[in-house]
Image 1 (cartoon, rainbow, N blue to C red):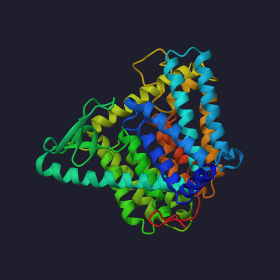
Image 2 (cartoon, rainbow, N blue to C red; image 1 turned 90 degrees about the vertical axis):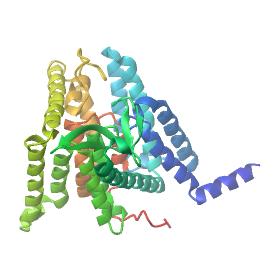
Image 3 (spheres, rainbow, N blue to C red; image 1 turned 120 degrees about the vertical axis):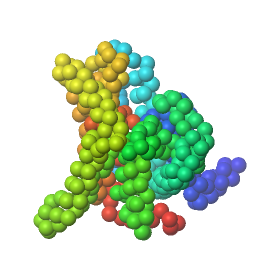
Image 4 (tube, helix red, strand yellow; image 1 turned 180 degrees about the vertical axis):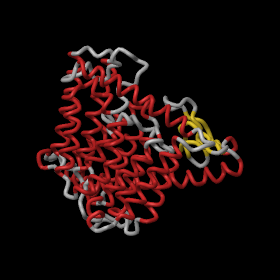
Length: 411
C-alpha cells in the first residue's frame, strides 16, 4: 500500500500537478485577502487556501524545506519579526482595536509563510506569475470592451450585476467583467476607475506597473504585454499612480547612464508626462479629476499628519498596532508614514529591513529597484501596503537577468 502511495505521489510530482495546485491556491487565496477585491468579506476562505498551499508545499518537498538555504530567508525572518513585534506591542500598549490587530498579524504570518514556502519552488513561482499575467491582460481586455460599449450605450446598459465587497457598497460590474471604483467626469464624459482583483485603483496600478517592468523577463516579445499594462495603468485613473509610474520610469531608463551618454530624450519625455498628468489631475478645465485628487491627497495628508503627531510623542514603540490613536475618523494606517504613530520607529525600521534584505539578496538589483519602486513609493505615501500580504510576493520573486518564457513549457 505504501509503495502504491509513493508511486502516485511520484507521478504527481513528476508531471507538475502539485506545483500547479500550489500556484492556483496562492493566487486564489490572495484574492480573498485584503486589499484584494474580496478580502473584506471572505478573509477566512483566503486563510484556509493559504494553509492548504503550505501543506501541499511541504508535501511537495517531502518535509525537507530548508529555510536557511532559501534566497529570501532573511526577508522572511524579518517579516516574521515584524509581525511578532506588532502582536506583542498591541497587547502591551493596549491597542483599542486589539482583536482586529491580533487577527491581522495571524493572517499575515500565514500568508507570508505560504508565499515564502511556495516560491522556494521556482516552478510554483513561474506558474503563479503566469496566472497573474493572464488575469492582468484579461482585465485590460475587459476594460477595452466595456469602454467601447459604454461610449455606444452608456454604463447602465452594460451593467451585469453589482457587488458589495465591503468597501464601495454595491459597486457595478460591467460587461464582460469590469469592476469600478467610483466615478468622475472629464469634459462631460463620465469616467470610472476600472479595477481588477484589487479593491482600490492605486493598489491595482501597482500590479500593472510591476507587469510592465517584468514583461521583458517573461515574454519573448514584451511590447504587446507592456502596451496592455500601460492601458491598465491608465484605466485605473489613480491620482498619484501616474506620477509614481513616471518616477519609476526614470529608474528604468537609468538616469545616470542617460546623462553620461547624452540620452536626454527619455528624461524629457518622462518629465513631460509627469507634468502633463499633474496639470490634468489638478488644473485642467472641465474635469472633476482635480477635485477628486485634492480630496484624496487631503485625506492622506490628514492621516500622515495625525500619525506623525502621535509618533513625536511616542517615537520608539508607537501607541499600538492597528490602533485608531484616539480618532476613528482618521486613517491612521493609510500609509507607512501614517503608521509610524501606531508601530513607532522599531516597527517601520523592521519593515524597511524587509525591503533592504530583499534588495540585497536579489541578483539584478537594478531590476529590483525599477520593478518595485512604485510599490515602495505607494506604500510609503499613499496606500496601506505595510501590512498587505500582497507586498511580499513582489519581494519573494526572482529578480535576476535570466529570461523565463511563460508561454513555453518548462523543461
